[in-house]
Length: 259
Image (cartoon, rainbow, N blue to C red):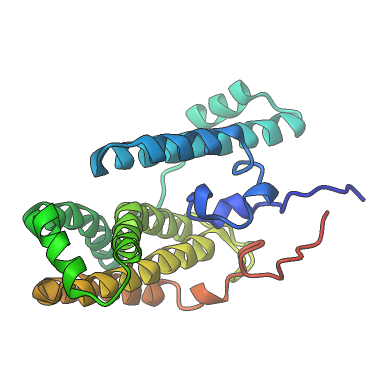
């Protein structure tokens, strides 16, 4: 038995938000020094756009790390990465076409990400210094705590706005291309469906927080909540047992056994 602190496969069905993960030291990817570098860059970011670019770079690097792990497993099996790529090139796989519902669901999820950016731009005046000062004066909450909660809600919404669509894309294509001997629930498309639902629910909670802070925006925020609810119902229609998927570490006891 190999004694290791890492939880096998935990990075496959997480949200890649390493700085907020309680299992960061038990993840092959999250325990990397790159995460510390990202946290420092986030602290030094001067605006939301810069923070978003840092997040995108981190996601891209995380996917690159996953690719390297896959390459290692292929080489362990006795085949080189070049041979693997050559096999794919010579024997291209043509996946089955998605259904109308799948196409509509993916478009709905991807459009949500674009709409969030448009919503922020349209309502930017609400979050200027003058309005924020008025909000702090009218609130019974500690001003620093209030600003922290608002910023946190925005960070969650911003982080997941494109993540949801990406995971639903993976869910749909994973379902279309699955192997017949895959476990009926513990498979990749169920895992992708579940993490998309986790992201949707976290986003919804953050929208509700903003609605409480900015009642004038309640109607438009309600539209955003309804949009996310449509996406969630669409995911559960495609993968009814998505919530039954067990994510390593996250959905098991915190004292996850070592291999």
